[in-house]
Image 1 (spheres, rainbow, N blue to C red):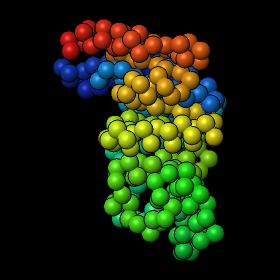
Image 2 (tube, one colour; image 1 turned 60 degrees about the horizontal axis):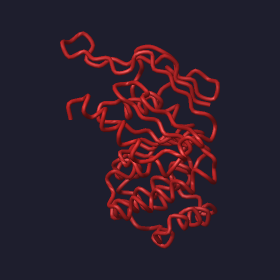
Image 3 (cartoon, one colour; image 1 turned 180 degrees about the horizontal axis):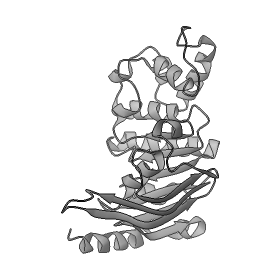
Image 4 (tube, rainbow, N blue to C red; image 1 turned 90 degrees about the horizontal axis):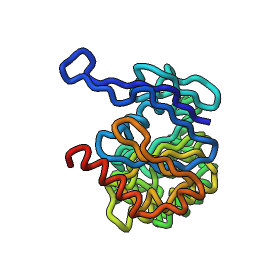
Length: 257
């Protein structure tokens, strides 16, 4: 499904601060995998997501998605098949548009825009049904500006929007980090529900080790651009928080934290 082959990524090339984060890094995610990615700051978590989404170009290696080489494909073209939810709730929706308008815009993500009305009234009932799954009453606030929603409500809307079209890969970039504990739990339950129903391949970067253990069928820990832990299926199900913390703390000590 998704294959990263021998990726290399350098920063500040040609300067005294030049660093190599990934050096021959390979990673594969199968169809339907829900991979929780953890690691200390600077381990390469977000850089990996950026390489996959096309925000950042690799200096070497290849990225194959659905059997197609997308290494040099532009970010906006990849977005037709990849949905992404960011840490900042404001990045996934437009503040000055209503909930309805945001959903209509996302609904036509792969379509052609013309001079007809932006909102297809025949789709409104579908939008309400999708919002009902959030359990936040958003289906009754369709004409509310997205900018007036709470962080949790806005992130839930962004998650629904990211899954509206037939994306084949969902990227979650610390999508609960900016939320309060209650909203984080709500958004994670919604995430698990949506991913499970659509069986969409999902990569979730998180600093919440409990979420990493509780959700998904695979746990990947990165350190300085290398995989230091990769637990799958039954092995992940048997993993204990103590084991994860021990490895995580060893990494932190190695980094001088």
